[in-house]
Length: 245
Image (cartoon, rainbow, N blue to C red; front, side, top):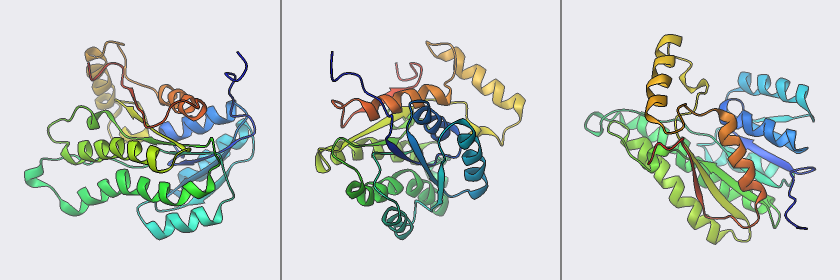
């Protein structure tokens, strides 16, 4: 049927946190569909490495340094950039520990990175996006199924899930959605030994209906679907291999 053939060909996507993992996989998926990519993040070394890889795969990629937890930095970046079609943010790391022994400074920094960064991005990106454009944020399964020792991360992810529903109303006709991944094999676990990391993946895989942990490409595929589908907004899509069943 005419009108259902959708593509990212010729569009531009700003990927925040796109230097590795889900963000990089999303950038590669956009390029595969003929789209242009802008990468933003805090780690310059990783950004340059991602830029080199993406340039080798497709169109020239521009990188931008930004601290997404600092509203002035986000504002200045968005003022600098030309108009673009889609925004994706995978930025934010978790914080683990019991609430009774919470390290307030570290916990607040984690919440800022996961939640407030997305508030700032939506605030300043909305005017740069066209009718039909989209914003997609990455939250996490802990926002749907909390776990002991992960209260701050659970709360931050749940806050992102709630935020996209409000933004979908406030920013309409822009579309705003979230993807909520489960355990994904990314560089986030690089500090673990290979043996410990593999054991963790195996334990998790044994509990999942799909029999394996996720890959960044699994999440990127859903992100690009949300970017393309003009009838999806205010949704939180779980990509967790059945972890919340």
